Each structure stands twice: as C-alpha cells, then as structure tokens.
Image 1 (tube, one colour):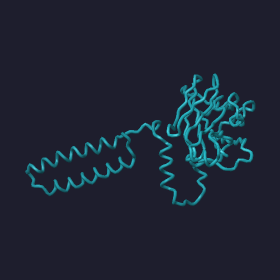
Image 2 (cartoon, helix red, strand yellow):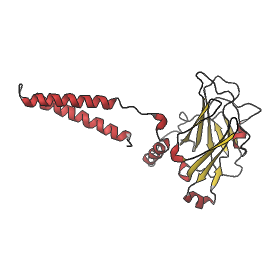
Image 3 (cartoon, helix red, strand yellow):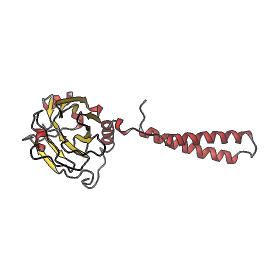
Image 4 (cartoon, one colour):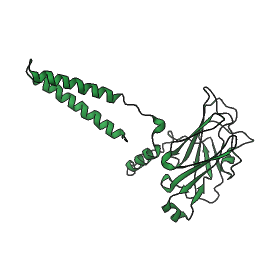
Length: 244
C-alpha cells in the first residue's frame, strides 16, 4: 500500500490532538472511577502508537523521485521565488555539446522511456520507463550508477559510485549515450519518436581524462565513452540534457 508523507504527518497530528484531549478527560474524571482507569489505559495505548509511528523509516533508494519531482512542480507552479538558486545547482565544471542548432529543451513531461548506454566490459543498453527512476545499474567492474531526473537542470542525472568500500571513481563515468523515447503528445509535437541527449554537464569535480573526454558521452556512438581521470573522489555525476 502506498503511503504519502502527508498521510503520515496528518496521522501524527491526529494522534497528538487525541492524546491532549484524553489528558483533559482524565483530569476531569473522578479520582477512583473505572472511567479514569479506562482512559489512562487508552492514553498509554495512544502514546505507544504515536511512538511507533514516529519511528517509521523509509528506504530512500525505493522512493519514486519522478513522482516526487512532478508533485513538487505542480505545487510550486504558481509561486515565484527571488534569486536564481545557484547555491542549489552550482555551475558545472565542464560542458560538452553536439546540439548544433537545436534550441528547444525537452522536459520530463515529454518523456516516456529512458535508454542509457554504458560501456564497461562491453556495450550494454538499459531501457526503462521514467517512473522506474531512481534506476540503478551495477556493472562487473564494481561500478554503480543511479539514474534520476534533475528538475532544476531539466536533464537525466547519472551518478556513479564505486561499490568497493573506500574505492574512488577513477576511470568511471563510462556512459556512452543517453536517449529518450517521447510520449505520444511529444511525438506529435516534435515529429520524433526517439531523441539522443546532445548536451552533458559534469556536475562533480571529477575531470575526465584527455584520452577519453566528456564529449564522448554525446558523440552518438555506443563504443566511445568518457573516463574520470585519477581522483580521490567517491562520486561522479553527469547530467544529460535533451534538445530538439
């Protein structure tokens, strides 16, 4: 059964109010009455329920970030904020683009599926619906890639990690190409079924090697890919933007 954070919050408030009302009833009850004993037992049960509820844990790896992002965007659609939020999304340390004259950037609402091409021991493609994000890829080379949607930059975020404890992301970042399959309205609007990401932002301070630069992530080939230069960092992040 799906649980929303709002549901949990409302339940906590309801229990708090019930506990406070119960305490008032106990104070107003006769000292030695059976009613007071019953109310005290009920109060203990409510307080135990409140305590148990406060210990609710969520597995954030299993949260559907696409649904969360879409819900937030709907809530904030009519709200204006001052500033440019640059502290939330610092400028990338590198950018590579093969977009040419393409100017229209696609949003999550245009996308039905995402296809990520990764090259470790061999070229491998991962095709999944957008609602499956965060989507995780694990390779034989101890690489782990977590794929989500970056709402601020409007792109597919791919974060790489070394699954070996204390391992670095040296030579990681082996994403050769990212494509998206458009939903029906977007296909009709742009006259395309599938579009390749033509721009990639390197968000982490993990420069790529000169022999395998960032441009290889958007050159359209599945056999060429960037590689992180020697680093002590434990994470690499690339954000792929789609233009038509």
